[in-house]
View (cartoon, rainbow, N blue to C red):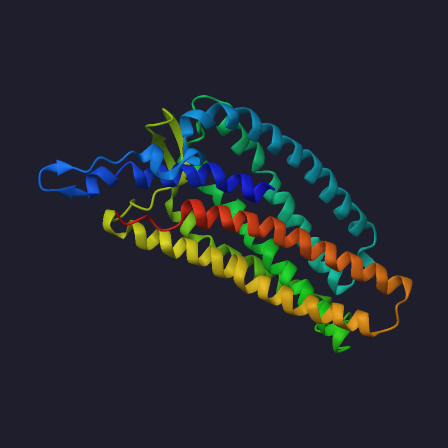
Length: 297
């Protein structure tokens, strides 16, 4: 939910950035082409109609997600802390996943304030870079950790092989730290290009990517690179791993004895996979549909 709602308002802004310059990019002789940027992209990015809705809906949604998510993940970490002497490999991954979720959640109040107040983003460029980059770091880390969990479960259930030894929990910890470091590398584009910018149509400042920061001509290249990293690393690769691993696990559970425990595990796996793909597909659809490459007129 958080990822979807974080993408829609930002996506509309980026579409606006592209469409408001169409008259500058499309000329025939000395006459400008008559292009209506509002009608070109439809009502979804009609910011003049949506701004009041966003000012109420998004802060309320973020507040609910913040409270529920913080309580849920806090309870999870508390339970893990009490049983830390008997942690399994999966518990270690879940611990890091809970930390990633909490770090993502703590950025929500800042984004909620941006949409709630008429002045928009008033925290400056440094906090914009930090908040946006932290959000993406934990987004990537969460997805990669879920893929690692699915791979560990696949090897354990299907092949009866332990990817990590319980006698060497530091190996699993090291793998999680590698996921954090890799996620940090993936967020470099956000650290570089996120900044506070003034939105003429909204009449207020926003925290967005400024891909024209160094070279106007390289804007589309940087935008495409950012989208490809998000699509491939944040969706295609982890989704492929999870689909393969969980499909094989489900086959193994169906072929084995149908004990109550296995039936419960079967239902849990199906629920996790369905929720994962609903959330990630919606966020990816919003990102690609609204923030994709510009239309060539």
